Image (cartoon, rainbow, N blue to C red; front, side):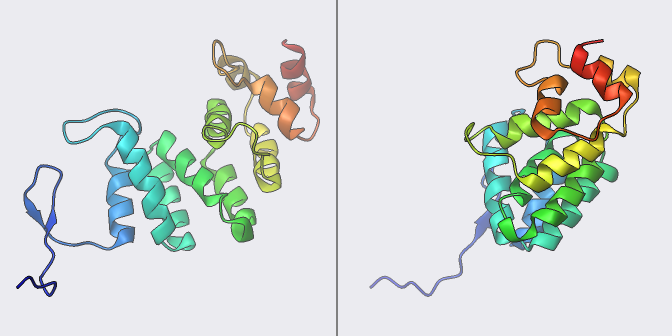
Length: 182
């Protein structure tokens, strides 16, 4: 007769026995050790991003915030913190905090356009959350003319000018130049 009262073993991607770790630890390990969307020996980049998205649902919001800031500030990762911030905006009750996190992790002008591309990756019709607009608007003022010109977009689908039109940041002479293409 079969029994369901068995110890469930956990295995690595290669099939070796592993110890069980919490969802927070799994998320932190996945975030800190990946180059998002780049395939590795063990798994492809798309499955890593899907695993991260699924783990976020199991981890406390404040822990995800902590992991996001650690990934950006300590590990100097670019895309994973933006993905985590995008997932934080799915929690409608904590969008103010998500906006504060987004403003902190935008350190280059192209982080703005990358975030917007991630935000609309699954649903291009989804309106941008108000707190995301405000955070991006404030983040625009972190950059000088050189940085804005350097990362203006080139052949990307979403350019900084598009982001300006969407978020309507506080007016400044510098952003006026960007809007005019100068």
